[in-house]
Length: 321
Image (tube, rainbow, N blue to C red; front, side, top):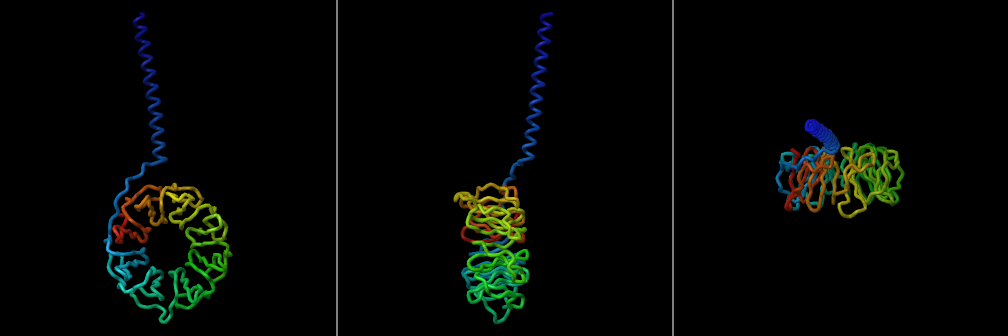
């Protein structure tokens, strides 16, 4: 009997140990699955598809199917297949994008065929057309012209930006505010800097830093950052006080959606944003995962499905595949 009792005791002890092990193994598996669902493993970055070869000394975003590119010292415009749409004939430091059928080049607006718009009317500077109006500078002051080339809002401002969501930033007596399309001041000038609205908010600068206001002029996100950019896909790039890897992304509630870990960061478009870590640029998704490998010396945001990128001194265009 002592032998039998000893064998039974050992068997029961082993059973308890196995149950204990299986119980904790089950708990471990459940915990692992929960953590994976909350923090999914990032997908490995892939190489983007080059659709327009690296052939240009400079390049801009696509707008209305055309992009400004520079070959040598001259600017022209290409289409999404890389074909020349407007010849390389513009020897200026910068040219504007097409918007609402017109682009500002040098001192005048042109059509997508390269013809001069508003014959005989020239301007010192201009922003693209938006909401049927374009901010232009003449004799040192800014106003807004309509599609006939005539002033719809008189040139009385020290500075002006494009309309977006019914409002445009203007500078008066050294400070920035916002007007509506009728030229009425809707948000009184009190900012050191003001950018166009995007997704219902606009970046502004106060004495303490940059923050975001709503269309009523109320500060929605506090002015605690040293720099920032427009919202896109619900996120905005912002720079903290750190000079090294100080860029990250906020959501519309002011929460840090993507940590400050980049040396530079651009706005989200089409679900992707260009970011730089050290000297190389790549593209992240809205979860902060590197989606397109950091292979570029410089990279611009995606627009109309393509993005301008630079490698070894030349610019081309990629698509996300």
